[in-house]
Image 1 (tube, one colour):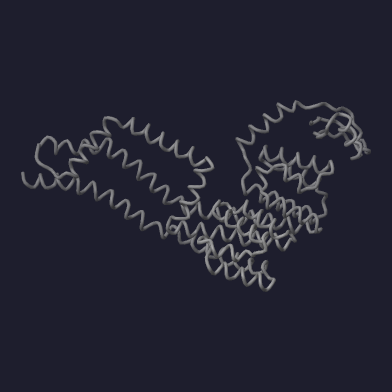
Image 2: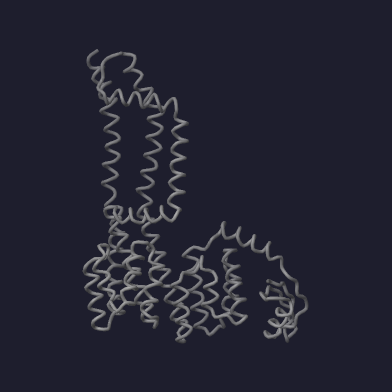
Length: 403
């Protein structure tokens, strides 16, 4: 339960805020333990608060960039030896996202009540990943919290920049295809029937493909609204299906089969696997638990299943490389390098090298992605223009030459 309080410090300064406690007596004790003299304590309407929180979550959410900035600020404040509670409170007051501010203030309250920082993060699993929570926990146990926070910030930053690069590379082709689809719809619906009316008036024999275009233009001109509704319903149904677990799994498998895009996605997943597993092993987390954590954050169910198979192999006395060799989605060179790391006892170091290599591959492919897609777009648009020229304009030109 949350209580709104007004309290006075030992210096006489009046403070206001929210404290989370089981009852009002416990809330008063929490304030007193923090050298605050309660002046008033009032229970908040928990249901109303949760409604507000849910609304702000749906409206705002928490982006990767906001998480990255949050952990960067935490690292700076921890390095300056600012207590965790004070650091969270300071960041919560400065952040612009109302929903994230609520979450940070809740974490500050939890830490103030004696909860470890990692446990406070774990309460908000919709924002902070399992990897983040476990890395922070490892940092708390080892006394290297700042290093753990830095790693989390670096990890989120890498994912953010990678996502931004891929989105930036795909914006151009998506925009071109969208504009081409709109223009094509308008041409077929409103312009094509006006062009083909000349051919129909002459009542001469035309090739079958010209007749097909005439029929398509007449149909679209008469029922364009029904076609729009059908397209909207189809896109809506597809979007809904892809949001289901089975639909999401099929999408992930389909992405891996797309030429170029599939290779890029594969490199991204391998980079995440190697980088995160290396960091977790260096933090002293047992290998089976580390593999389980990585399977939850790798971002693809195919690779998650492979990683969990590797964890089962280790439980039964096997090793990671033997599980990876049997998976066609894992490049043979990766399996060989992991085997060398396991045999030499330098698995974390080997994984770090693998991560750097595949990260560079992802950067190179991302930079050339637009260049690779441009020829495909040109061919696609050229085919559309050729159909219109050969099917409509060329017959009209031939008829005009015969007159």
